Length: 178
Image (cartoon, rainbow, N blue to C red):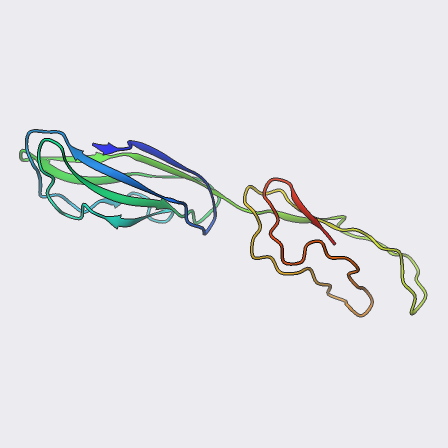
């Protein structure tokens, strides 16, 4: 049987890798496990085997073990599951051993507030009043690798204070202001 039988990698940002987890397959039977297949994951899109100490090796009787290291790497947001399995013959009878592994893919979700601002009539060459714009992350993953805020029209408008710069924006309500 596999140990642990289940594992939850928790929330992992889409496209990122979770920490790894070692799964140990133990043969508690009196006969050796022979003719074994390589371990496989039923969902190789959102999970990967990073180290395979089992391969197609036999597993000795009465406590023989082998290990497989797995990590979650969700390709999309939401809950994903996989089964780690390996088929061996125990005393001549083919048996598949499987377990359940889950990961929840998370994303950042950024929005500016307010979305628009009318500065009214401003004399040519004069400055208008300022407006603070807040960038909020309502997603379940941090926004990382952010570029500095920029204006599509820097001739008529300017950023007077930049509290965002290239900083990350924390998940679940994290903010920065410009």
